[in-house]
Image (cartoon, one colour):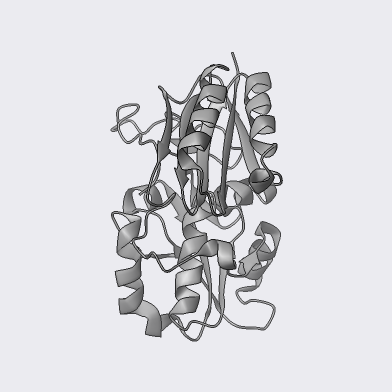
Length: 259
């Protein structure tokens, strides 16, 4: 059976977490879906897979809630179920940064779409003629599977390390246009807001992350594949699984969600 895989997030205030968790868990379990849904006061972050009709029925139920009506969902397909079980959890943050004053719902940092970023990278400068620096906000092991050519990589082991590394490097980023990027958009959205908070004036997030870039642009300026937190492990620019490395047993680096 071919599986439909969906990924989405939204920063929106949620005050009914236990009831929402039960509703979404029951709707997913009854349809045979597997994956992870994270809920927090700041929003929702989800990765689910299953039979296409069942996934779309769950998504339709989610979108009946006005808080999620127009949530942007990324889709891909796999030949097998990439998740081992279903988890719907309540967390302190849907992507942990340990910076509680940062509230993405209050206003996003400016975003650059994939086509515009590719054009900037072709030219080497943004539309104002300012040099462009790509900042990878993912964990080091993810970066090792693939990244944009020339991107800044601070070799963090978890996202909670990002604020401290930014504090060390902020001066070096003041005279360039910084584009933060990650897998699907959630980490680079928080990262871009924090950079703005720290006084960087020319900061963008890559809208939709690497997965949206692959879907829109393809491989241009990107070397390797994109690590994802399920049993597919790494996706190529067609959003199809890459063959696992010969020295790495299948499933060795699978996790349910990024830190």
